[in-house]
Length: 217
Image (cartoon, rainbow, N blue to C red; front, side, top):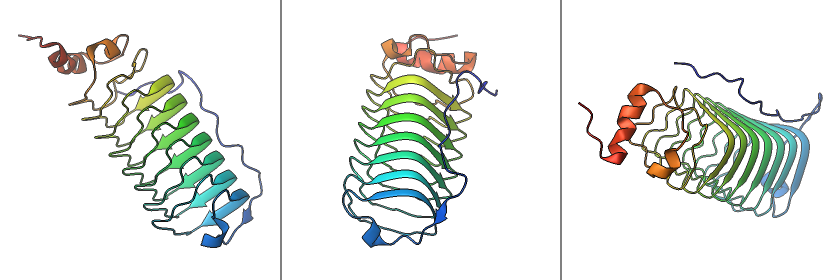
């Protein structure tokens, strides 16, 4: 079953029509660096720690940041295409009007982040940490979020479409008005009180009944 994607809109990154091709180097990414109005392709960084990085109006294509730490950074009007940000630390980051398209984000740490107008499309987000983050106008389109942690996150206009949420931890996250009918939610961990107002299919309702120790014959 396909969920309707017209319930709310997500602002796309506000990118200039012409972006300068930038040959980025590690020296350009020191603490509190500011990168703006750039198109960056095939940039590769691994295991580095950079605090308060500021990215604005930038596109990354085919780039990797495996195991890097960008805590307390700010990303505004940015697009990542076919990038690998596995095990990247973006804890306490501010991320606004950002797109992740066909990206590998396994184990990325977005806990306590402020997320607004974000689209994740066809991304691998297994084992992602979203705990205590604030979500406002976020869409997950055909993403694998299995075994991710949404504990105590705050949802406002969040959409999950044809995505995998199996064995996710969602305790303390209110799912009122969240439509999960097109998603795999097998083994989801959540408190009964957090399910109030959630939208599920009849089959999903039977699965969730296990949380209430109900036996259906």
